[in-house]
Amino acid sequence: MTEGKLTRRGSLVRLGGLVVGALGVGGLESQRSAGAGPAAVASGAVTCVLTPEQTEGPYYIANEAVRRNITEGRPGTPLLLRAFVVNASTCKPIKGAAVDIWHADASGVYSGFGQGAASRTFMRGIQRANAKGLALFRTVYPGWYQGRTVHIHVKVHLGGNVVHTGQLYFPDTVTDAVYRKAPYNSRPNRDVRNASDAIFRNGGSRSLLAVRRNKSGVYVATIRMGVQRS
Image (cartoon, rainbow, N blue to C red; front, top):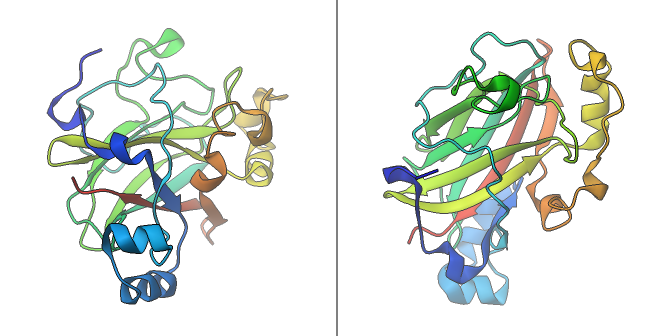
């Protein structure tokens, strides 16, 4: 597959990756006051950087729609994904970063492939980060498929370059709770959990989403991703 304008490779490769962490606002403020730039990263004063990137996988489709709701009416437990994008050297938000996600539906199917080939759009979308670096998506809790733990794929684009390609993961205990209910319980016995997933073992613990369930029964998953701007 060819990549569109938003998907040209950026310069992150020379740094070996990026950080993904669920840092609180207070933690970010203390890091900002401690200094910025490569020296601060090297000294450890800035700590929101450099977790390894992870594979794009075989199911990427370029030029996804810019939209918040990516479900297209497909069933599943509602999930609100809150992805914050920050500058890896300063921890400051990056307004306008394009966050690009795709994942399997509740039955473990990707749009554009196999059983999902009739549509190329469900569970796929792009959002621009706001002034706080926040990109929001309304989706459903992903289903599992053979050989992989539950995950969401993500790319972050800046200025026409891809500055991060990664995968986001869920705590197994949360997944267990979600999968006890329809429509997930029609597919019991998922075969891979986080600890036994080959890709998760390569930095996935630092790509774990912080997940809570709100009063409406919607699962809210939050992560903070630090990227290099150039």
